[in-house]
Amino acid sequence: MPKTIFRKAVSGVLFSSMLLLFQTAAESFEVYVSSEKDNTIEVIDGETFKVIDKIAVGERPRGLTLSQDKTKLYIAAGEDDIIQVLDLKTRKLVGTLPSGPDPELMALSPDGQRLYIANEDDNMVTVVNVQSAQKIKEIPVGIEPEGVGISPDGKWLVSTSETTNMAHFIDLETLAIVSNVLVDSRPRVAQFTPDGMQVWVSSEIGGTVSVIDSALRKIIHVIHFEIPGIDKSAIQPVGIAINRAGDKAFVALGPAARIAVVDALTFKVEKYLLVGQRVWNLDFSPDERLLFTTNGVSSDVSVVDVDKLKVIKTIKVGRAPWAVVTNARSYH
Image (cartoon, rainbow, N blue to C red; front, top):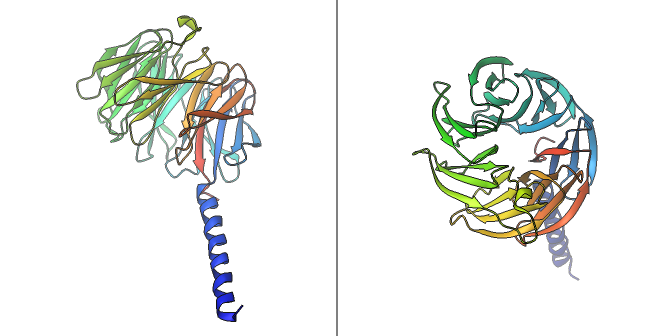
């Protein structure tokens, strides 16, 4: 082979290898799972699906939220009544943020400055300045708040109250409730659509998801679930994940051990996927090709191929996995 052709061939191979390495590095990610009974955060490698670290944190960790720059993880330590801050590069706890009693779910403002925390035991949403680690305000809401969903423009927060059966719309400029929407029994998660036009609220005991018009603050559709051979009382919607395109949603159905695949434009349930026992929350991989679910009773995580709508892996984790968050390894 002539030297020039050989060099071109070698260069081509090197370029292809470098491109492959770059693509692999760009797509690599980690999955963080809070284990409520083990008081740990499990770290899962997004490519191998192996647990690569187990980090001891506070008592009864539940809600998880990434910082705006994706370098830190905020952890709601329910029994310690604090939010812990985990550095994702060192995997060390580096600080705490104040919280009211029994924090569950939380939402970060789009600018990364404020954290809104549902405090179940005192019927408040606590507003915290992340930089100063100071409370700004406690907003009274209904009984047993859990879900907190923030609109994409950062102007509105929806808090769900499990016992009051309401979704409270909070103006984030005035930090006051302006509307209350009655939903089905025991609402859990509130999730805005990517365009901010709707907020989806799951009702665990009611067995439904209410789709609320964000501007009108009225329910425009109620999604019902029916699974052959499964008693309706076991179908308990909790976690909701809506893709960035806004056309597909996945709903965790608790003791039914299923997630529902929903056409987010027509609200039609397209399919049910069998996952682990007591599926609680879920999150997409950064590229949305995979979906990870926490299964509280079977103490594992199910991995769903989003294109094929097929469960491809089960990963054993700590006891009672609760929340799950994925993150690209851009901080390395």
